[in-house]
Length: 265
Image (cartoon, rainbow, N blue to C red; front, side):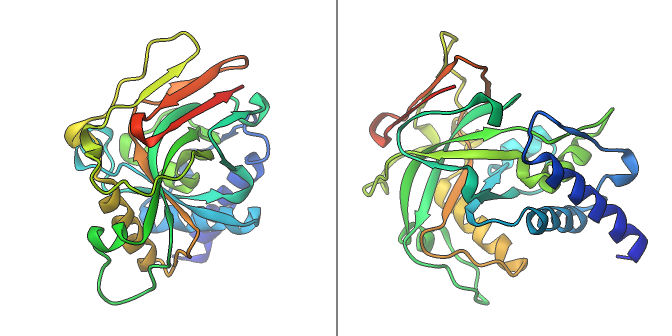
């Protein structure tokens, strides 16, 4: 990467970081600032994190099933950091809408690491990861900090990576220790916003196998020199269609035997 291109991408990271404290103030991104490939998108994402500072409580990953990637035009998973300042624990909360303007809510299966998957030459397998994690139901609050005039699916994918995978905040419900026999790909979740109809579930091959998604994320991060620690969270992508919400709305997610989360905005 030459210095001229590097300066352009550093400016993109600066713009995205500047928009983070005020999500309503989205920034316009001109075409010459679009990342050209994943290397550039990760460079911007990492630069945004350095500018923001602050602790990270884990990582999220989207586009975790092959079917979802095909439909949305992603060539691989979409990773992003979970910032500690936007990490919320527990099953019931009242949240300020001004922190989440124009956001949407989606349910996810998340894990908390009991030990660290250290850097090694051999890739981590889903079966190994499953023995290192405890399950949490989760709601991710998603949205972009940018707008553009026009972009392709591939360009949207790279810009989303640059923008921390579109993550704004996370709510993690109560832990579930006995989860290994759950059929995640067919486990229905009832997500509602106010009096609207429940969100459609991504089921079957539209939904990932969560432990495999966790392994894929850990192996991806290892290629970037990133190591997760015991206590970090991993969230494994949307299990239901994202739903918009506004001031006064209640967002309720019923995961059945896994638990429930209710948010009031």
